[in-house]
Length: 162
Image (cartoon, rainbow, N blue to C red; front, side, top):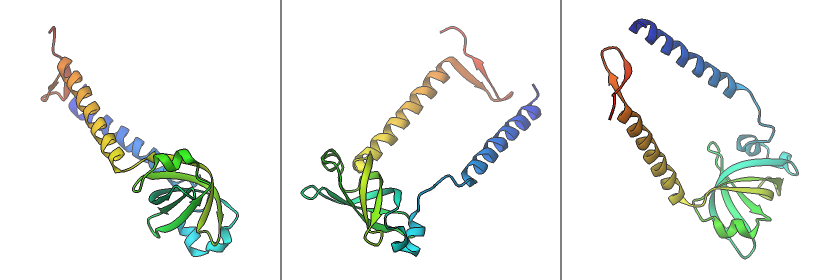
């Protein structure tokens, strides 16, 4: 296959993939209010279900409560109640969680029905990045052990018997 055709095919495939991602992201599939809507009229959302992604600011193990910040513009602070003991024991300040529950008290309190701990603290982020980097290097090393790049033709060719 000629180099020009190969580059044109790659360009078309990348454009198609980007176009599909944009169309998917454009559709509104979120049925719960976000922090922008809550900030405009907090009392209107009392009693409604909400799903928020937030960072843990403080953990009160005695009263089974968390204080989280959610959103970016604006960033709002919520008190999460009815937190299971397993969550308060595992999450620390700086951790990242998902909270599903019902808003109350001018949309400042969430009575949680489900909580998912994404990252317990900042060291979890480091673990994810290091593990991903090592996995990528391992995959690239194994691939390049068996294949080599032919720069002139922009192809991969087998290295032969090792």
